[in-house]
Every structure is written in C-alpha cells, then in structure tokens.
Length: 124
Image (cartoon, rainbow, N blue to C red; front, side, top):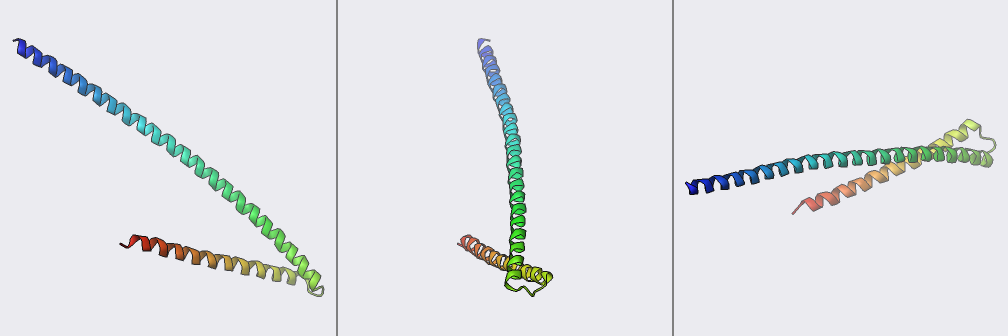
C-alpha cells in the first residue's frame, strides 16, 4: 500500500511541476507578445518620424530649388537684357529640368549597379 502512495505523491509532484511549466510558458508567451507589440509601436513611431523628416527635407529642397531658379532667371536677364522675362523663366526651367533628368539617370545607373552586385552574391 505504501508503494502506491509513493507513486501517487510522485505523480502529484510531476503534475504540479508540469502545471508550473505550462504556466511559465503561458506567461512567457504573453510577455513575448507584449514585447513584440511594443517593438512594433516603437518601429512605427520611428518610421513616422523618418517620413516626416524626409518630407520636410524635400519641401526645403523644393523651396531652395525654386529660389535658385529665380536667381538663375535674374542672372539670365542680367546677361541678356533684351530677353523677355518669360524667356528667362523658360531657359531657367530647362536648365533645372536638365539637371533633374541627369540626377534621375545617374540614380538609375547606381541602382542597376547595386542590383548587379546583390545578384552576384546570390550565385554560388
């Protein structure tokens, strides 16, 4: 009889240990999910700040380009006083458009080179 009681106690102890382990695993999973949510919120906040800063940088850049273009117009009018104002604006606009086109083409070439470098790493 006594041997059966010992088994019963060991089963009870084992069941208690398993119940404790399950509770710990459940608590760990809950804590891990809370951590994932907090990290996601933090990353979203950081992304929003980066987007806002990028937007402000682009807007400041556009204002700067507009001011430079207007300065270019005045410079063209100083060099060619017989040129009408609209002609100076057209000439300045063409220069700015040419510069932006060159920047886009060079960016595309850099992107193509980066893709080639990345694809070369994929090959064994």
